[in-house]
Image 1 (cartoon, rainbow, N blue to C red):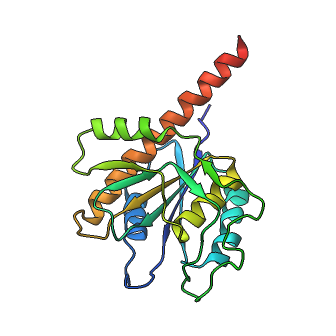
Image 2: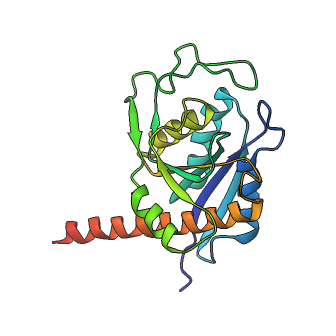
Length: 209
């Protein structure tokens, strides 16, 4: 019997501000070329840097694909490493998007919790990926920046009950190439799926005893 392929959604962002090319979307396109193995049904999407588009698109992606995991990839102009974000934040959104808009409430979900953590153990993922000896440094963060990256992450975490992840990448060539970023994403997402599976099998095992 053929094993069911696991749906995984990975998103990158479109251009914004001084970045006419967004490294996050370039990295996601590289990942799409490489794939995530035969048992993963990979879907990639470019998300506009617009609050209202995010509020519309993220729930639609979850509804359309019922994915095992959604990984959002964003650009950080300050980053020099590939960064795994542990959580998303609900309030503090004052930066204008590409439509010169920001939420009047300055929050993602009115009445939602201040912070939502991913159910994925990012420390474990970081440790495993770092042990692979890739030519890319992977680090951990608890502050996704209170702009569209953080807004998207929180919206997705809220929608998925924590079954989302966010990865920040530096600008292209500072210091990594598109191919290096694509390979890093491939390794990171494979390890995220492994960690997710292990934690779920542990829960199932615990429930059976």
